[in-house]
Each structure stands twice: as structure tokens, then as C-alpha cells.
Length: 322
Image (tube, rainbow, N blue to C red; front, side):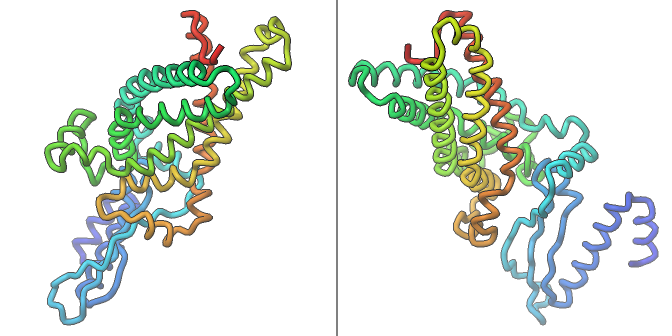
């Protein structure tokens, strides 16, 4: 470090000072032809859950500064959930947990309307066509997966923007939801809003299919277990159990697909799922973030089905086929 650099570092927080020292050492090593990793942890911290990242660069000896990029790799250290929560709150406050809210909010509105219309329509159509003898499990599974597949057309662009706002907006630099849509369409075309749509489709059609199938099968079981009056008396507690179990199981099973989907959405055009699996390993992909995902989807599932039950009673409409 030069004297001027030491004076500047003395005025900075310890973490940022250490980061800048590492960056200076790395840049000087580049001039000598060494392989280094530039860990941009301070800047990455502004990106919510993105974690640390780095770029591996190689300067050939005698290359006179003509840098050859050997590749790019996201370096995300293993952190406990509570450590990530504390890091986000420390750097960004409560605002850090609200990133992507507008995309999530409007996407959920359009998605919910489209999904329930299609789901109910598909169930009634299947029962009318094949009669009451058709296996209910097939009806629930086909209806939910078909409805989710068609809903993806509306929902996916919002989810894409939401993930980028939450994780790596220091790359995409979106100001808000309208600006994100304008920027993507202007620079990359409409199809760029569907980057990673295939793994997303597999993830959410599988998740929703499992969630609704488990929920409806459990509800049907409890209806057969109790008399009509007993079931009405226990309906809220039964609904709570069914929603909790359905959300937890569906989230755990689809966690590997969710991991691939999020990385595909935020990894850019050159992201390779095959390379990502090779680097991370199958076990790590299956378990990465599984705790928060199960907790989130279990809680969301309980709230979701409770709201559906209450609103259904208010308007005399039921989710079930009867």
C-alpha cells in the first residue's frame, strides 16, 4: 500500500478496507501474470441474497496487459440462513427484504386470476367428460399442471424481474418494475423476458401439481373420516394441516429444480445448467436453500389455502370439485 492508500483505508469500515486491500493486491498480481480471484464481497452485499461473487482472470506472462478472460464463476460461500438475514439487515435495513415486491405483487395477482380460472375449468371439464369414476388424483394432477403451464406465460416475466431485483440487481441495474420491462424489451427483445422459462415451468408445474394434489387428497380423506357436521366444525384446523403438509412436501421435492431455475434466471446468457451441476454437485443442488424454501412455502401454503377457504365461503364457491 502507498501512504495515500493507507490514509484512505483508515477512514473506511474494516470490512471495506480489507476488501480494497485484497482488490489492490489482486490487480497488482494480474500485472505479473498470476491467476487471481477478485472477490467483490462489499459490492455483492448490496445485491440481497446473491452473496459473494468473483471473476477469475488470467493474464498470460508477457501479454503486455492484453487480458484474456478465462471464465466467470459465481462464488457463493456457504452461509446459514440467519447469517444471510443478518447481513442483509446490516447492509440494507428492512428495505433489503422488500426488494422485488412490486414484481411479486402484480405477478401474483395476474397469476392467481389466471390459475384458478383454468384450474376449476379443467376439473369440471374432466369430470363432465369422464364421469365420477375417474381417479380424483389424476384430475387434481392434470388440472393443476395444465393450469400452471398456461399461467407461466403471464407469470414468468414478473418472476424473472423479481429474482433479479432480489439477488443481482447490481448487474442488471433496474430502477423499478416498469423500467426493468422497458430495458429488457428495448435491449434484448421480448423473448429475453422468458430466459430460463423451461426450468421454471418444470419447477412450478411440478410444485403446484404436487401441492394441490396432496392438499385435495388429504381434504378428501378428512371428509370421509368425519361426518358432515364434524368436518364443518374442524374445517379450519383440517385446512391448516393439509396446507402445511402439501406446501412442505412439494417444496422439498422441487428444491433442486428451484435451485437450477434461480441460477438460470440470474446467471446471464452464458449460464450453463450442465456446468453448474458439475461445479456444485448433485447433493449440494438438492439441499441448497432447502430449509428456507420449505419454511416459506409451508407458511405460504397455509395462508393461501386459508384465504381461498374464507373467500370461497364469502362468495359461496369451493375449490373442491363438489
